[in-house]
Length: 166
Image (cartoon, rainbow, N blue to C red):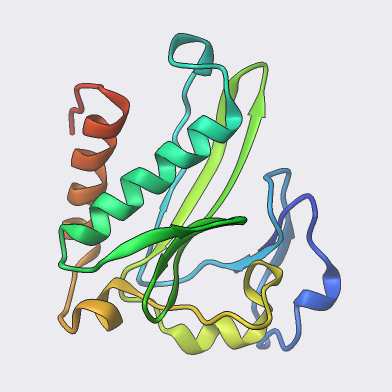
């Protein structure tokens, strides 16, 4: 599936494969791909209880995903001026949120074992000069979605100071 955020440009959907659904959403951001091997998280939080600050929230999501990558030996980071999480080989995770009345929706897409060729259908996040990568590619080992989910849950609890339960 290809999703279009509020600022998406249709020309960033360059070569959709037959049968690939293209969906407009009310999240922030441009165009992204969602498919097998990707961990998608849509946290729903009341930021009034934490900190009513969208930039702070997005940066905390980045912190969660940076910590998740580190759990697999992948050095990830922010890139100034670009939302998401980056590793040596490219963009590791996309973030597109919506905040209405300080309640969050939408969230992130972390490439765990994603078939990266699928991103050739789009200009990911509108960044034609940037590549996309995955935890598997960066770590050089097989990583299951359940293992990645557990790492995200642990990091989320730590970053947001919350007790997490399965």
